[in-house]
Length: 191
Image 1 (cartoon, rainbow, N blue to C red):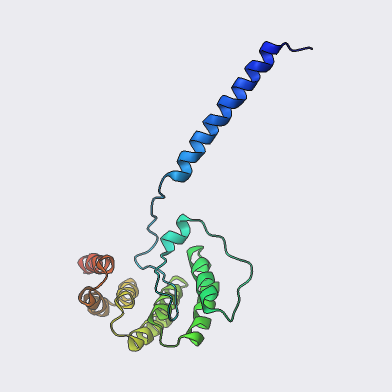
Image 2 (cartoon, rainbow, N blue to C red):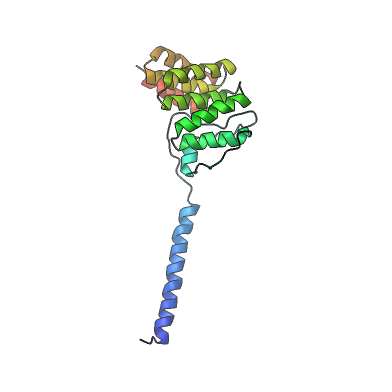
């Protein structure tokens, strides 16, 4: 069957129009800001000296980061990134192992204790989580996020008095308004 020139011109116009429509739709999709996803009351942060940028589990999930296949066990930044990826992907055993390894690089890093404590709680090892969170408080008693996580884990375990104390400290520590708000909301829900 031989097609005439009108058919081919029509086909070309259709292809161009279809391509532009697909381009317009996908372009808009990638230009729209992503909606944050709230996955837990406590953010996961990069750990170690000099890694002050907060990365929440929600942010990692929002970008759907895949877990790299290899980690440089001598690089604390890489370890932290890998641990946070594992946490965001619900691979808590692997995350806990790497957070433990990070403590070798920064044994006084409250962020690492916080992340490890929350991870252990999600693994169902809440007593161990409380131990690590208290070690984080001992390392830095002004670390607002660790107080929040300590309050959260205690409230989940039914330790209302300890939860109230930790959450009150998180509210009073002060600098981060988001943490203060989360702590206040948790306090309001305590019996």
